[in-house]
Length: 293
Image (cartoon, rainbow, N blue to C red; front, side, top):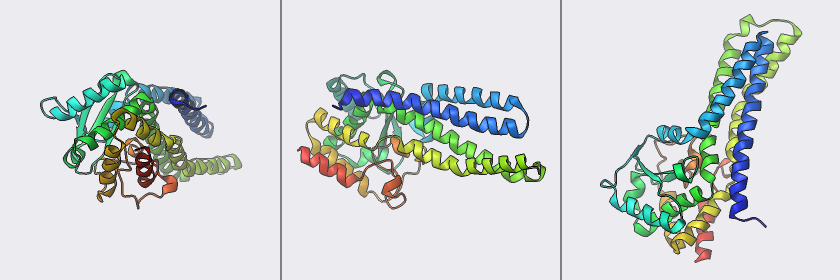
């Protein structure tokens, strides 16, 4: 029977599987170009590059995510209530207290990142701190601590780097196909390789989307449930989700690469269909929370 421990093991497995698939994908692109330009060095470079990016995604993905979202570290004196609340919940959850960051954005939202519980970070927006009362903020912080305890953060942080790299490579491929058209060989092999390159260009953004969707949307329901057990007050998180979801303006500092990390979709709900959203419907999450109560 599935449990929190099987979920944690699944996240670790998915992280390493994602890294392996990234290695294969980049290796395939490198092989295509090395064969096309008759240069084995290109394939070697592609393999080395993919290995380096896997290492970067494991060790530095949290710093990259914080940089992309323009989050800044905060001191205890600046946000004393946030610090004490997080410390108390961390003790209750049996976790080390994470480092705290703040994003200067009026849209209420939050996310957790880091490679493990000992190197975890929770980032919240100034809009979240302004709009939520203490019980609602407790629900949000408990939710993010649950992501840390459930080992969701490594997978979610790794996706930020790898999806970003797939998007960049897709752009490089498209520019190469556009500007090297005049110099391509006109034989059958050149034409066939050009078609393969075009297919890779088309598939790259689709692959990036599939990588993000590989993060099960059920992780949010599990984190909600874990947060409710931690605070003993599901209504606090339910009210917080209502306030977050009814804020109409999208986050200025969010991007498609980091959207899956936030507690709720940082963009307008109309901008992304539910089929391709990395989050379950907020209404379903609120209903589940209130059923717990």
